Image (cartoon, rainbow, N blue to C red; front, top):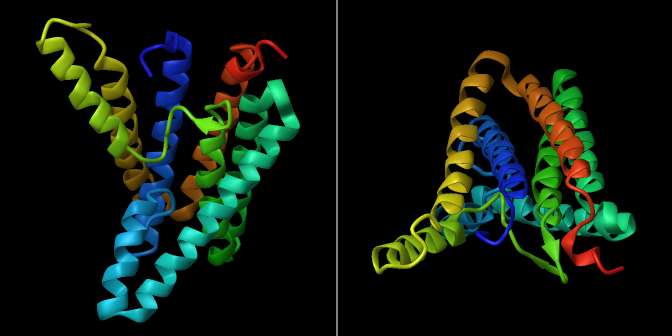
Length: 217
């Protein structure tokens, strides 16, 4: 992530915050299941298969929905070509908006589907040459890079190379905190704020210009 400019890093941190916000809302409302952190749900599948098949089924369903969300985001990104980033984020904003509306009218199952689809789709924002370059819904890889960058700094290398990774992780953490507080006061209606934030990020992404993997197209 260190090779990206400051604007892209800021956008990534904002998206990480949105992911943390939505995941916290999903985690609390679903009683311990995740809408963006699929490693956690995979662990819950394994534990559930040994202790609680119903819980395993819920976790497996969420993983399946997330994969579909990734696929939908990839399709939107491919159709949008050089405008992939803003168009994927508009798609994410629409999904989160629909989740908020359906939840407001009591259709919480549909709201959960919208949340998971959105969290899968947002991973299509930072795709280059067919690969996700910056993951905004999962932090294990980021923490590994943070540890390696800190080690490099201590050994005389780039002294600030660890900061972008820390910023990305902090984005998820702060988003999770805000999402928990928002859910406490507004329930699933709090998803409306995430939809608005995603729309704002779409405008930001549009101003960043052409995506790196389409720069020569």
